[in-house]
Amino acid sequence: QVQLVESGGGLVQPGGSLTLSCAASGNVFGIYLMGWGRQAPGKQRELVATITSKGITNYTDSVKGRFTISRDSAKNTVYLQMNNLDPADTADYYCNAEEIVANILYDHWGQGIQVTVSS
Image (cartoon, rainbow, N blue to C red):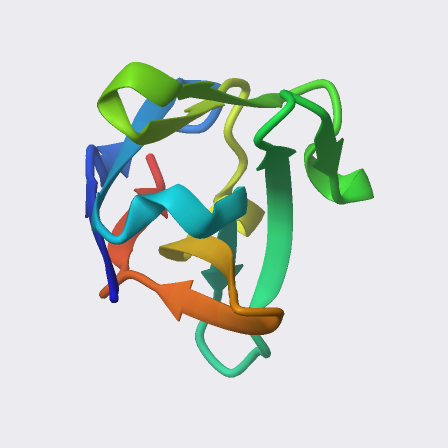
């Protein structure tokens, strides 16, 4: 089993920056991809950034050029650096990890952390 714990959320003004962290623990050896999703009130959860175990990144269009995902494999931690934040980025942010064990895919999510962009 994989456990994911997010940290770093909070309130930030428009145009500001914030960095989220996600520490993975447990059976982390089968994790091949980690990422961040978000869910705004009344909307579906969307995956905004992912990074593979080989460091290949992918972003949804709305955050390209503003968000950067990175990972520290030694610490089993993934980060989301968010710059030039907009009120539209207000949401609960969730860490995600995809794991393969015995050819079975497992999708793990953290508890979520709130990010509010407001003046």
